[in-house]
Picture 1 (tube, one colour):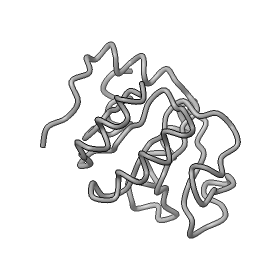
Picture 2: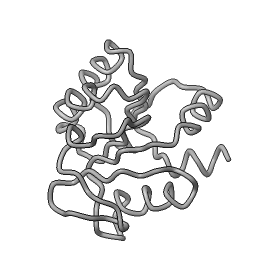
Picture 3: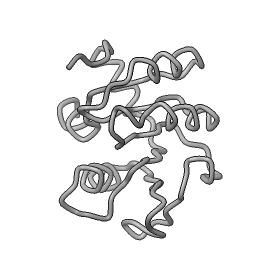
Length: 136
């Protein structure tokens, strides 16, 4: 699977942004959608969980949708299957994040083009944890 064409320096710049809303964050500690944001939280990122099935993850209030998040976010980190990403990106654009990050294994050309057309950087098929470790 292809991935975005950002350079290491561009990814470092993206990783310097610290307010991250995590769509599809999990309560299951064995899933990447749990341990990736937990790692980020432990490394200086402010994590905002978004998951309609629970009220709290990692001791943080969990929002049902990205639209419910009142604070500004820099990055919207998406843990949803590729075929479910387009509506997530459409809703995310309304929050005006600087970046939408589609985790490793997630790629949706239509959603990626939509984000770019709205002036939002789109990272796809990359893991934030792996990239942070690789570039730190």
